[in-house]
Length: 96
Image (cartoon, rainbow, N blue to C red):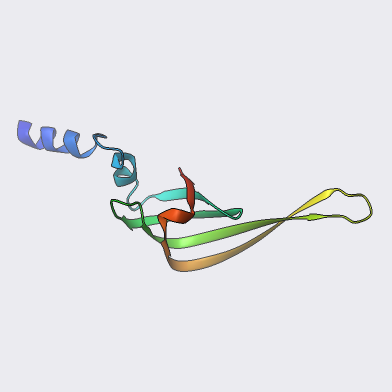
């Protein structure tokens, strides 16, 4: 019985840099990417380089336009759903 408790504690602790990512498997995560892209999704898998397989992805792309008359910034967001997505580490800025 004590061995089971030790095993459960060791699987729930963070002992390596990617440990937090391991704890987020099959959980909803937020991913900030380059080019003003954001993903809200479920983490299915990842590798040691932090390439990720994501499911039930809602991608939001934000664009900024300048109003020619007032010179104000206009922020526009476009959202769409993607059933499954492979995400390269070179595009990542932040994972929450």
